[in-house]
Length: 267
Image (cartoon, rainbow, N blue to C red):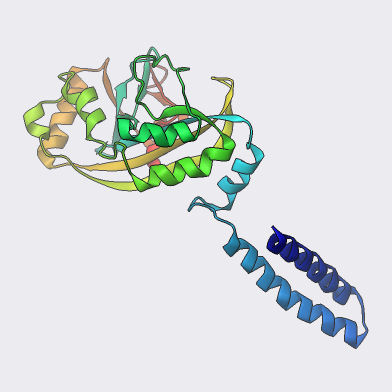
């Protein structure tokens, strides 16, 4: 604590001397201002090095302070970017009527992770009606634990990290795609969606929506199968252009796209 106070005092003194040197003409004052300016840069650098951002950057660090004692809803998910002929595969969601969205869903945590989450005083979030999915990483914690949670999540310890489960549940188990043609999935992580904490008017709460974006690497045969599946199942599947992802509307007003649709193109 004493070290932090000393650093803050040094920062303030250097700021004053730098400003004074900038407005005064006396050589000694100008010299003091130049020295203070140099020291100020070093002080700022030391302060940044002393702060533990948990690998999440300044923005989220500031937010976790601002929401210190406020409850924040977390939805930690992954989405597939499945491109065919310059368009992207969307599948009908289970919760909202007539909403199509990218293949994917929230990660799950393993039983071994529960003690870690309990130390963060987490609560399950069921605002989306997921009362039967008690192992989803759709939870609520106070802002003070946000960086600790993200550090645990990034460690991949005792939680799901392979995105194939939702692909299988949404496309294979439903019979939309043949299992034998997609026994081996090739994919690569191409991005992350994380805009920090924002207020959700839909759920009336502060929330952080995080999503890993994976690109499915398709063979020519797999692309052909997906084209056929979309034609055979227009009520369950659609291919949306970039413009449609942005407007959240595929084929005019016929199909509603989820707000997360544009995440797969980095928006």
